[in-house]
Image (cartoon, rainbow, N blue to C red; front, top):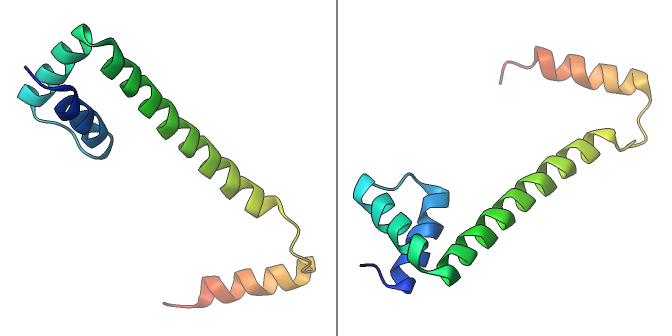
Length: 86
């Protein structure tokens, strides 16, 4: 049986990589019996999703911000970037 420390470590690791089958089984069994670790997993997933949502919103807002260039200047920059081989 996993300790809460081991389970929370594996929950965190599962956000970055796919756990091995036996690790996933052990974590699921632990989460079925441990309310606190189950809550930790839910909170961790919520934070991950909130960060993704924030980052997606930040990327969209950067493109929507008017940076003060004329449309002609933007077109020249686009053409220059498209013709640049690097």
